[in-house]
Length: 113
Image (tube, rainbow, N blue to C red; front, side, top):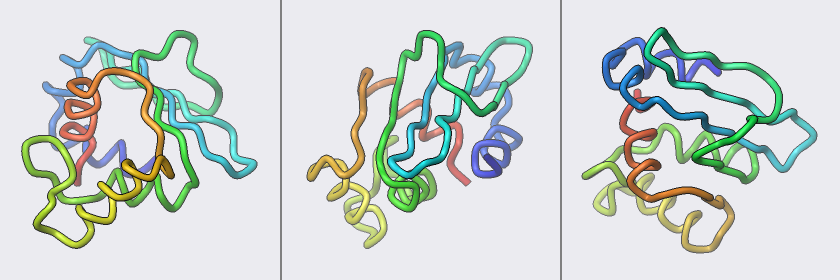
């Protein structure tokens, strides 16, 4: 996923410090995406995560919108229209999160463009 790669390239120290496995699961017939943040690098591959600390699922356009939305304090910005739309997707459960809010904030902070 190019979004993850660009964000990680801009913040490599933060990416290595995360030290977690994340799974992005699309509702469409795409395979899940496994992202492993480790001290020696970041692995992004097709396939389910083994033991994800964070799982994000929803329709592909909704996931992309969440991953590129402007942030404020690590969460989608309520003062930006795209941020409000992303917050609405989370509130309506169009995008579902399993895992801690702090981890989600850290993940979004690392991958943001």
